[in-house]
Image 1: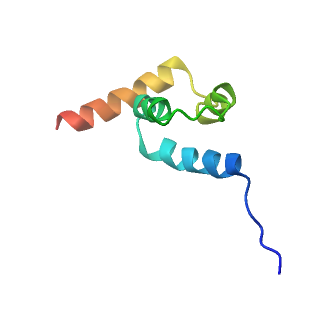
Image 2: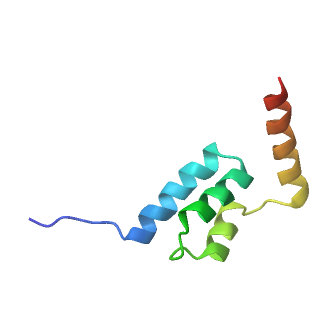
Length: 71
């Protein structure tokens, strides 16, 4: 019997993808700092999480979240 075990980094990347869909970008980065995930390549992760984003597009997303939180 052979068991297929994902690499730890693949599991971490998948978990971070899920978190990135449910947390504000600033909270995700704080979470990473709190967890001290040194084995994760931050620059590679940042490129994946914010692929295609610009300062303006991130600003708009943050503004929407802030507006929703004010209600």
